[in-house]
Amino acid sequence: MKSKLLVSLLAAGSLALVGTLTAQTPAAPKLTFPQASPPATLKQQVGITDIEVVYSRPSAKGRKIFGGLVPYGEIWRTGANSATRISFSTPVKVGGADLPAGNYELFTIPTENEWTFIFQSLKDRPQWGTYAYDQKNDTARATAKPVATPRPTETFAITLSDLSDNGATLNLYWENIRVPLPITIDTKGILVPQIAAALQEPGTPNPMMLFSAAMYYYENNLDLHKALEWINTAIAGRPGQMWMIYRKGLILAKLGDKAGAKAAAEESLALTEKAPAGGLRDEYMRLNQALLERLK
Image 1 (spheres, one colour):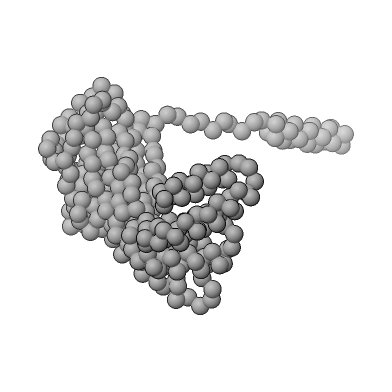
Image 2 (tube, rainbow, N blue to C red):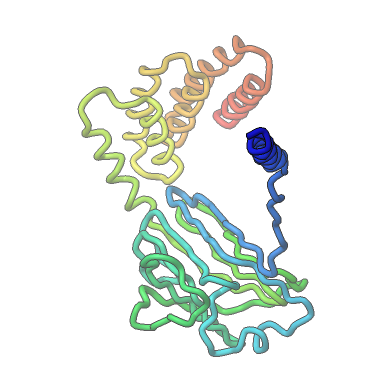
């Protein structure tokens, strides 16, 4: 009986020891290895449009790229691994071709003198490489001419440059070339109806929305009388804001009302002088003084 009890105690002790050792054994460290073509994500707001590019970035590593690793005249995934993805939150034009808002796979066909950009709607998940590519699924195609770069690019890169309210340039960089594709956006055609719809909503319009609408109209030379009406309502909703009143002066100046613009600048300047010392005060002192100088 004693021997059986001893065996049981030993077994229980062994299990407890194993449990203790197991609990104290640290988890295996998570290993991360470098990737030959690391992933990258580019996000950029262009006007009112959000653009996102998700791609992988191979490096040249001494290889001949175009006409070599990437053959001329053949479909390319525009990067490495899965096909490059690009999304637009509003309709755009790519190289003059219409492209609805949505998510796309971006393929290209490089040649020495001209590249073809191909946008296919992303159905589910991006395909690996170009093995499932089918031309009948193309949403839009555009062409662009490659230009030589002053220095070679070791690692493939996609950038967005030349940003404006109405577009940007999508650039592909690798080896010794850049391939620029213009993207244009009808921001006015999208935004103006949205402003009109917002103003039809019941209730008092948001002063900041009215201020932003007024400044959009001012900066894009639209109906300046509407811009003035909206900024006056915005100021009534948020009185005493030196930065709003300064911009009212800009609108009045563009309308040719020098006296009104001068009065707005002087009102803004008086408020600015009472503001706490710091960057905002210094900035609006300078801006108002410059506006008054221009109105002389």
